[in-house]
Image (cartoon, rainbow, N blue to C red):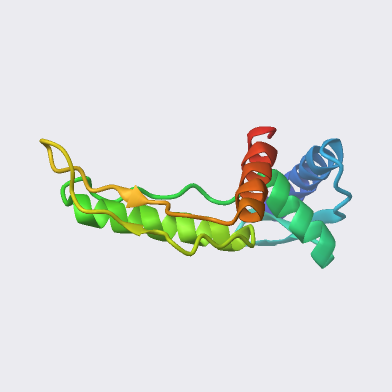
Length: 135
């Protein structure tokens, strides 16, 4: 079997396995083997509706957050604050008093201050966290 035919066969097999994996999770996403490029197999995925894309993001979750170098406590706190704001924004939640607190304790730990929030926002935050924990 030549390289082109083998790549096409592998692409078809991968497309079928990926399609079945999505089906098992409740997603119907048509796909098939794409034309091989440079002897490599590719999978062609048909366009996905926006509501399906939103559900996929919900099920698969956001990409893992990267941790900065732990050498600078202020940089670590600022990066953690940015990550939290980004996640809260994605969940349509605003905590207006978010900030960085002054270093505390013997080791001068820099803390992220979550601040005050309206009870409705706290309830929304609790619901969002519980929903994420169910995954």
